[in-house]
Image (cartoon, rainbow over all chains, first blue to last red; front, top):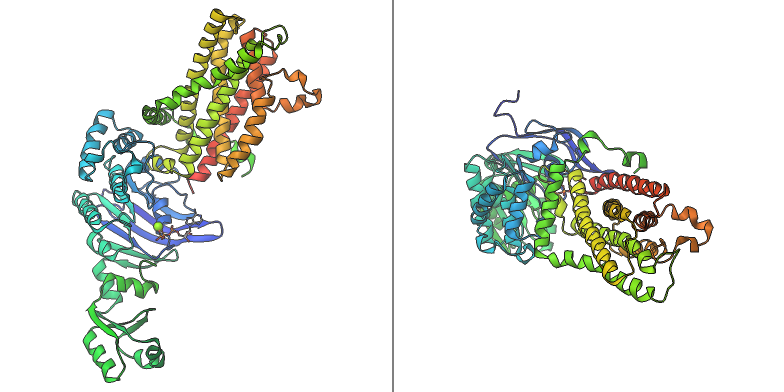
Length: 311
Length: 271
Ligand SMILES: Nc1ncnc2c1ncn2[C@@H]1O[C@H](COP(=O)(O)OP(=O)(O)OP(=O)(O)O)[C@@H](O)[C@H]1O
Ligand SMILES: [Mg+2]
């Protein structure tokens, strides 16, 4: 008997291959009830492939995957009945209106028509689309479509919601609206599993993060833990000419605890950024611009994958 | 994919009628906005009948003892079943599959590929049966009022259910074709090299006995030929055991096409 607090998703040595290409290369993780769990990783890391396997939209190549303690291979309908899915690319029903999208979706879940009508109204208000209820889907803006996709994913009152880049391409206002809505769901006890390229989103919403790169897990922990574990307290960003950088590469590398060479800047990790900047000045090197700031998740990401988040 | 694998259905793939009917409900919701599309489907075989049957029929003598209008009417019924299946099953479903990603959204619910496939087939079948019945009623009335009669025997009553089988069979075949097309240009090949020749050479406008007898075997493989012969046998009262062969071909061909289409859809959607 699975206990009520057993993991909602459990993956062991989970793999996904497309022909000879390995998209997910043996990953282990658990998603616990009530938490907000985030996948981070550069383009092609395997986040969507993993989400699709959980959503029963993609067969597992090998390893173990259990969702609600059931096997997606044999129990897909039962699993999907309890899931809400917001895919990376919207796939709303283009032949139906906004409201009809919700009504029809409810019917696929066998929700009685009367209940579906009430729920559609609630959800339209929840994502602030009530005025557009009779619009054709094509006439909505990108952000509105995204909000409708989120509303649609809530129609069956799911226990677990899969959100693949829920706010990519949205304006700041729309993003904040979605964050606020997701936060409300989380407070109501809904488990969230999301992928994102935005560090502020990960920090705002996620209790636990999993960083993927090339199909593997490279780190796991809360946003705070990851910062404490992988980067120093501060980061010094310095811009200098390529010639200066090249001529002093050896000397610069001795400063701080770690140095990252980015195309347009050098990034020194140190507990005291000002001190490193002082040392650079003492070497007599011309600095075009310098900035000391607190380390963020973005820096963790850079250290772990050697890339910035939006590749 | 090897054919034997294509033609076996696992127990958990057997579609559920309740879920399939959700797809029908979806289509009804969609066509609430564009009911003219449905209505326009009535006119195609009627216009053909008026132009070719009545217009050309006045210049053509009887065919095998029956009027030309009565000869081509069942053929036009069969071809309208085919065209309905092609336009609905082929174009609409292809766009939902590849462009609009409608099915990806639907499959994130408890619906399964087999439910979706059966649902789309049921809808095509419902549409086809409404067209077929209306067509038969209209030509019966036309025959009575203007003459010459088009439905020549009480067995014409059986043409309605037979037309529904024809519609179902063509819908399944169109669904299979849809899953085989990966690029838009391929529609033109299918329309130009498959659908159009079938329309012209399946015995709708002239008896296939006009064709070289060496081609007999080829005709046995052409679905529209079987459909035309079956419906014509019933509307003209030429009921013979060979009609069972035409019926069997349509039933088995349709069933095989449906299972194969389901497997291919599964490959396309769940990857
Ligand atoms: N259907 C497919 N066929 C072949 N390769 C695929 C398929 N789907 C994904 N891949 C490959 O698998 C790898 C992982 O893709 P995936 O979509 O999971 O990445 P991701 O982490 O979601 O990236 P992004 O941040 O760009 O969304 C990529 O290299 C991609 O090209
Ligand atoms: Mg992705």
